[in-house]
Each structure stands twice: as C-alpha cells, then as structure tokens.
Length: 152
Length: 83
Image 1 (cartoon, rainbow over the protein chains, first blue to last red):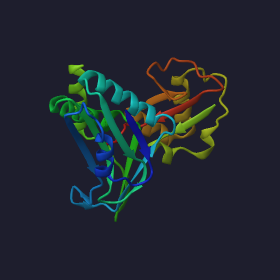
Image 2: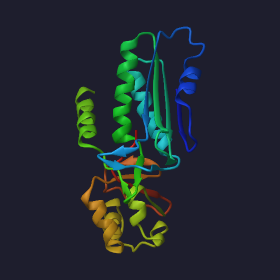
Image 3: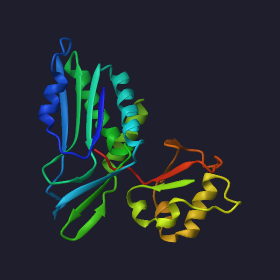
Image 4: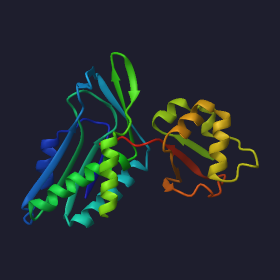
C-alpha cells in the first residue's frame, strides 16, 4: 500500500500508471480523483487550504486503507492527498485500487472515499472573493458513513 | 504538556494555550476541556457546538475521564473534511 500526504501538486494519471505497472496478477484498476472546484453553490472559489496533523493524518489514513483492503480483499491501494494551498482544477485526492476483478476494486475505492470524507484528519478551508470559510462535513457524507458502520 | 488545535480551532486558540500551565484540579481530559473553555470562551463555545474528537499522543481517545499527564500531547479535532 502506498499512502502519501503531500503539499506538492501531483499528476493522478502518471501516478495511476506507475501504480499499475508490472502487476501480472491485476485485472482491474479503479481510481477516483477529487478536484478543487472553481465554484460551489454559486460562489466562486479561488482556492483551498487543507490543514492536517503532522504524524497523525498519514497513519490514520493508512489504518483506514488497511481496513478497507482487508474487508474488500483488494491486494493493493494507493492514496495521495494534498495538504496546504490548492488551486482550482488541481487534484486534491487520488484513491486507486488494484484487484483481480473489477467488483472489489470499485467497492474499495467508493468505501475508502467515504471514510476519507469523515474520518481522515484533514480540514478544508475554502477561499473566495468574500473571504475564507472552513468546510463542514456534508450531511450526505455523514449518512454514507453511518451506513458503512451498519454494514461493518 | 502540549496542546494542539486543528482546523478552525487553530484559528480560535490563543497562542499561549499551546504550552499551558494547568492548575492542580485539572486532572482529566474532561477537566482540561472545561479549563480551556474558561481560558478561551470563543474556542470553548466552538468546541461545545460541534463534535470534537480528542487525540492523546497521536491516538484518538474516546473516554474523557482519562487522566492528563505532564508529557502528553493533546489535540482537539473538529469534524473532519478530507477527500
């Protein structure tokens, strides 16, 4: 598993290609890329800043990923998450799963993204022409997380 | 003891709160939360109005009756918004 927290922009396509290279046993690669929006609910977004907790955020995400890999029996997961300032259009997060068949890989990526929304120690602050505001978790994300808990 | 305030709590925490000198009657994490609310009411109110998670020495702790120790690093985490 490759779990990275980075302040530098990354190329999700190149990362996926490197992740999937030389995997004789893998029949499926599923990936999700979260992007920094240019607007949200009709308001312009000029950028994001993501706060993290040094020495804690990475290990927490690694624990979440290990749990998902075990539950969905995917042999390998890749997570790259940006911290610090991010510009509209840039990738915020990449989650990718390699698996023998597609079903497990699709499920693992979806579930790990749901966990990242509510359980990864990261805090987003959105900046726009009217100033900055901390992003609160969406009700939808909380409900999805609660549903996962019931399945576990 | 080191206190760490993440996300919006970090903006509301006075600088002096990072390395506090605690009175003797602050014995548990719950006492510490109450003491912080007394020292920094705006921060205390923000912490009370939302789901605040607590990490001690970089591990989440759910039982706020845990005693606090002089060499602890205690972090207060607002609801997370990653992904």
